[in-house]
Length: 299
Image (cartoon, rainbow, N blue to C red; front, top):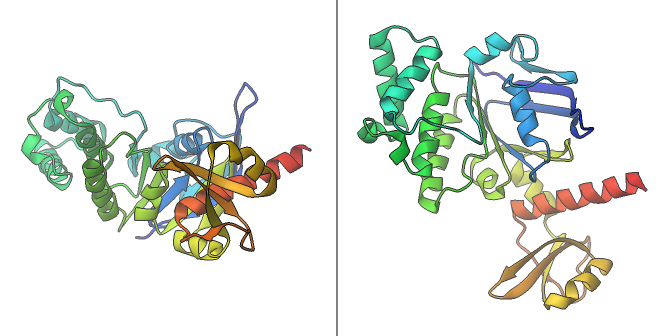
């Protein structure tokens, strides 16, 4: 049965006055959903709230017929969660720890548990190292083990928070392939600040900044909507401040020792070349407009 996650009017302010979430509204269908935003944008607060690990001040979350904020035990039965900091017992084998997690998930019959643990270790390509202690695993192997434990109990919703940070390119590709396979039949929320992860994996996305959802939709459509509005130019190191006073600079990067600037403009500025727009341009352009809007409100 296909399910959707519906978030309406969700807000959270911490005791120190930080507004972590401000009237968040999202509808997340079955499949891979990317949640993009800079560090401190509110992504982890939103993920922890969905995962029943912290309370909201107001609003609602529904997973199909489950009231997430009030029916926490029901949510936990159908939730798989891989947090940003996923700790493991370094002197315990992958097989033994996954068996332990299976017991905690309510899988008490030993024969059934053994079959499930073996199947998940095979699915995450860890079966051949199942007897190895987790302390010997690479970062990518630990993340795949994290997904194995998140898949226990056939969840309807899986949350992965910053899953590819620190992985080498090969491990990242293997992890992407695993997530793509999982996302065919369940809701998978991928919370990240790595734009390429969302571009590679997700058919739907949202960008969050300052606790607010500033855009959501299909990444391909967002890229198409920005076509012909992003321009680039190579500048000297000392020219950036002057350029920022004249143009809406959305990003800068060093390429082969030279500073390449991307700007947003409805028309081609003098001295600038056209850009093949990427999701990274969508991301930086959206954040630029969000910050500009916030400054205008403050003024």
